[in-house]
Length: 458
Ligand code: UDX
Picture 1 (cartoon, rainbow, N blue to C red):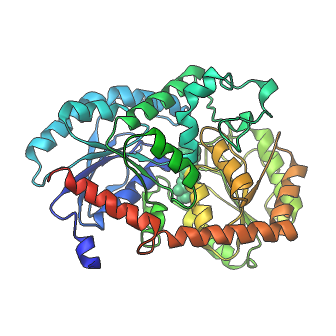
Picture 2 (cartoon, protein in one colour):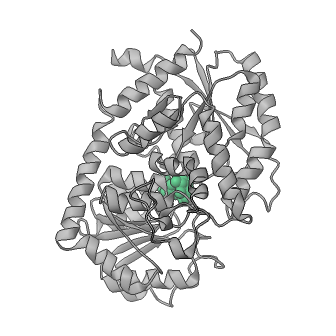
Picture 3 (tube, rainbow, N blue to C red):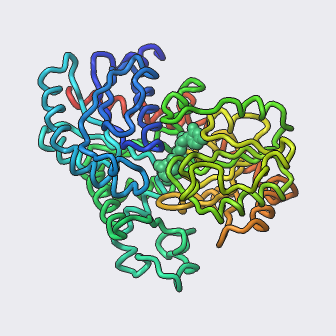
């Protein structure tokens, strides 16, 4: 029976296209892997910019389409602008390539699967009469907020006004106005427009695949099912379907594995792991508050400082001279970590995160409590859910200040509240594991997804 399931997709070819950002490439490749394990053959079509490394996936085929981005445009500094450009410039080359695949593919192609942010792919697929499934790489709760953007604007919550930040958003508990997604872009209106277009083209698709699980976001998923008349497949957490280590191979940067032997020398649940994902940037002043907060907390810490994380700096220049040396081995800094492995390590006791959805889900899957410091977009919603609803973290409020950092770390590492948060995190971890077992929610939704893909032709 199980073997039969693994072969169901055999003889069918799936074409998938990621948005070229780390937080989107990883889950799309994971999804491709999951579908490959059900027998489908896989082709990844991608932009030239941030192209995934095909050697990590010898069992997939890859095709590059020209994205027409100049050297200055090919940058994640303004991810909204980048996404807008891709949505315009890739339409023609993708349509040409897809049309040729539909004519010449040795195996039938039942559908195209693309990232929700690549809204242009809906029109391309409609023109070719090819069903499109959407992959939404973020959570369902934040998507519900995105789907409510026109209503939020109508009610005056958007654009954000300083005087209303502490007001509850009546239609979207537990959110306050300050938790609503925003984005620093060249053109402030462009984020609103991109979000509305993404939601609209999801509604026009044949279904949305989510890297989440029913037990985590049941209320948002229920609401989305009411509002969208298409199937919704929460089949996450994707990376837990797969063999350990599959995620690092989706990494655009090379992880520095030396931090693992440093972690081996630390006490159980003592280390604060600090990482703000692949796009967020912070100021020099903020870096100093983080550094001193970590130093004053007296806890060991592993800190990912990606080149480009500190605005205006190459790498570590803003840190005080001899910062790490003076801590006598209590701190370790890398440019990029093998994050999933780090979060699984028994020495890690807390994750100070920007609450990108992948980081949030990876932390939940390992039962690691979070210090939430969202920067933009869906991260503010994820942080609010993690701290106020799932109660698996604490949120750093207001201006980043070293005293608050020290307090937040202590709150998460010692005392009754810390114990309660840790227990909540372990309970949620169990649910994340259970949903993937046979007859678990994600397992069953994956079965329906495979059946629905195959039924397209019959
Ligand atoms: C972006 C957006 O910021 C986020 O809000 C959205 O939900 C997804 O796209 P990013 O900022 O990169 O993503 O954050 P996140 O979603 O957390 O993804 C980062 C990925 O990089 C994670 O899978 C994480 O494991 C990996 N990572 C991060 C590493 O492998 N090593 C590191 O050192 C840091």
